[in-house]
Amino acid sequence: MFAILFAKEILMIKDGMKTMKPSVKIGSLLLAVVMILSAVFVSGCSLNKEWSYKTSDKELSIGVYIYALDVAYSQAETYAKKLDDYDSTKDSWLDMEITDDDGNTKVAKDWIKEQAETMCLSFLVVDQQLDKEGASVDEATMQSADDQAETYWNVGQYAQYGYVMPMKDDLEPFGISLESFKYCTTEYSTKQSALFNALYGKGGSKEVSDSELTKYFTENYVDYKYLPVNLYTSSADESGKSVNTALSDDDAKKITDELDGYADAINKSDMKFEGAVEKYMDKNSIDTDPSKSSIEALEKFSAGDELKEAVEKLDGGKATTIKVGSGDSAIYYLIYKNDIKDTAVTYFDDASQKSSVLSAMKQDEFNDYIKDLTKDLDYDANTGVIDSYNPKMFFKAVEPTTSASTTTADE
Image (cartoon, rainbow, N blue to C red; front, side, top):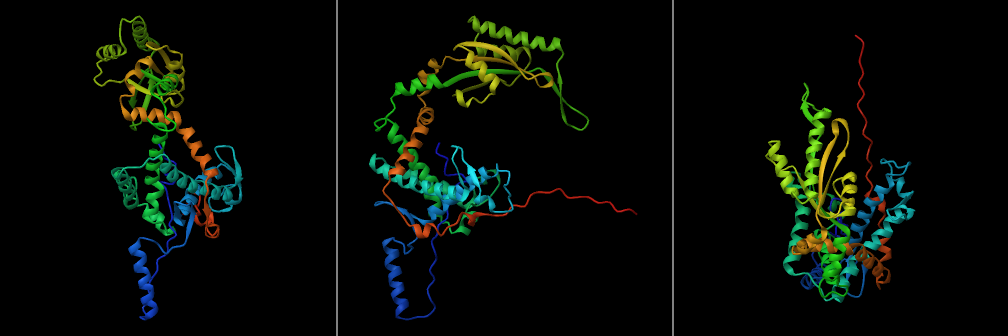
């Protein structure tokens, strides 16, 4: 839901904390330093003066800013790669103008610093607004978020698939600490989610009523099912490669007539979609149900443009058939659309589904809300320290891949 922080594998944050090592000389000066350090550690404070941004209630370490700078750098590079003059072996793209998804054009290095600042201010705003809304994250939820961050830190996010790539290997060279990583990734995402629910959930200052949510759902979502049937056969050639062969006109017509018949029966209320699928499976000796179903926002329709158009035209409780593709790639579909108002009656009984729809309804508004608050935030910036970090610090030349040439010597 709130994934903006995991832009570079999963948020890379860099903590500018510096390690202090005591001198081997023994004397009164050393004793004084040790006493100061002891007092600091006991009180839980830090001697590091390199903060980046702060309000009267919260101070961000420079590591948070470096993290934000890194994430912004990665995003800027995706825009730069669209430029004709982009060269992965040089950092010159940082001095070129890029255009972001909102149509804003700016010199890359300046865009990066601007975005990094906005991100840091967003951190401060979320912390501030949680207090204002009287909301909080329970200890168990936050602990779960921290555990997830530590897993990513120590083994990476793909360890469960056998790829162990500790994020600390990428982050620590820039001076990034685990604590800063947790704050900027899973902790921030968790707090952001809590604020969203505090605003738009039951009793929130921007509460969305059940009737409003249902109205949004019925106007923007579709509940559909479909049965796809190939109008071709597949076989392996001598090399083992799969080869498709279009059905003869007669064989294809048998399939289209069969599915057209099911659609007619459904529309006459003589058969349900599930019954049509079962009959098709029995007739064609198929053991595994080949039908698919989905309840999703129409604007994020996942089954292709042709099916989307067909579903849009259908009334609730009706069926239709369409052919997609041609020749040895043609597929014939039996499509059924449930009445979304009927779906809405029980859909929100599942809390996760209700939360998902609420997010879809209010996420853009929430993002704008946070963005607007950053513009009015009363904060201080440690400009001298912030400006000492140049986006070029993240540049790594990537040599273009070339094919090895083969030469033959005459004998």
